[in-house]
Length: 138
Ligand code: CMP
Image (cartoon, rainbow, N blue to C red; front, side, top):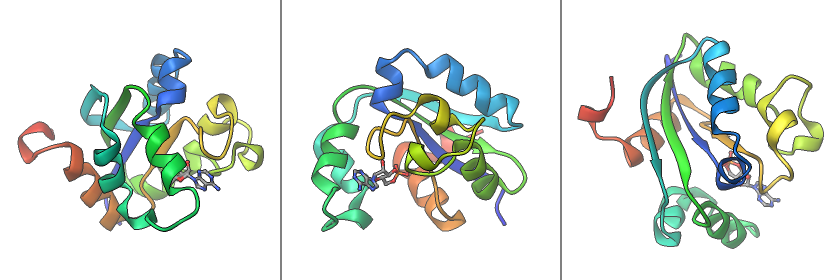
């Protein structure tokens, strides 16, 4: 059980003007931001980040979408971070997300679902280090 997870506020939520609202929900949820940046990744970088999904039918759509506009990438710290953050963001498909979750409030579809959250401690480390060097993590 690690105390860190990795998140991205996706292009749909950035375009809709929801960076502030989502960061507020994250900090209200007891997460501390230990690294954060605002950036626009290339399709090639999105393909690398989502390599584990290569070959899935939605891979092209996903990588195009994630490189369609700026995102916010962040590393978050809290006890039981990975599981607690997945609870806070809600189901991948916003139609199935519970009331009070970030995706219930701000996601519009399974692809444009406002936020990413790591699914394991191992992936949290891999994903966090894709965006941040050791010197950028506090
Ligand atoms: P994320 O948690 O960022 O990790 C993988 C992403 O793939 C997931 O969020 C969804 O946004 C996306 N995804 C999963 N299933 C589908 C799908 N059927 N169609 C489009 N995108 C999907």
